[in-house]
Length: 371
View (cartoon, rainbow, N blue to C red):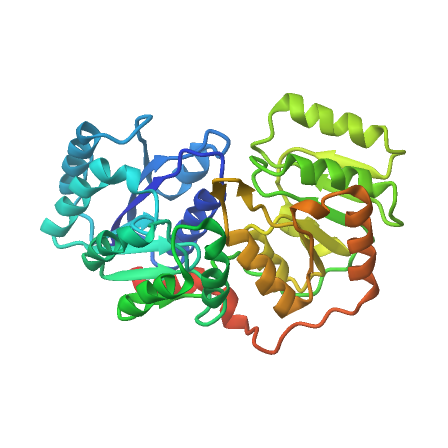
């Protein structure tokens, strides 16, 4: 019987890492069975109950420590896993080192294989930290990067200069050094509908979990009154109740063409039915690509001194693969969002020939490798 340990250290309001882990757990349960021990430090907005369908869940203490590392090492030794999967680490979240290293050592002592589950070809180490990153990766059997080979990586390398911590050449050198361990699985997505879904003539606006991009969301609410189609705006589960109420008041004041929702239940169905999707450039853009949707993207680029490049890279990729309209931070006004929606609706959808069905089967490929 397969016995697997999964580790997620993700204390922020970003739900993307939790979503990826759930998709991988679901595929492994369906295809491989076995027993799982799931070690979680995850946002409260993503309930632990969702993980309990896939194994025993152990919520971790508020912060990693040597003490929690000792407890995890004992648990792992007792569980005797055949595989340990760490979400994103060692490509990021290195503040978990005091906790995860003892657990990994215990797993290796028991003969377990180590796998990293990485949502994109990206890491957070600065140039001076590359030696430590490569050393941490050396103990892993496979590093599963959930994108197609040759798709996201060159875009991530170009965009990472925004963060001013590493240059494109040094960034790419890590992937060359690790080429024998890295497997580009394809995107970790739900399977798209077997049949095309009929569009319903509305604009869908989303901002991922809802922990960023308030200005974008408010401008999109204002854009609804300037557009021919109605807008459905999904604020995301991390949106505080007071802010969600404010968004609702703004929508009500705009003449009834905008409807605001909080949670993201049924988001895949809404994407499939929308005429165009307006979004930050988080992981949902891959689902939009699989669904062959027209897109208007406003990548979240962070703040001065805390720049983020991954969404900018995804926006560039979707521009080149699917003709997405791009809106940078200075463009986030109701008028410019409405104009971008009109421009994208006016042009036919053309998906690059580079895109293949295998691009969207990352969960199946990863489950096959982990076993």
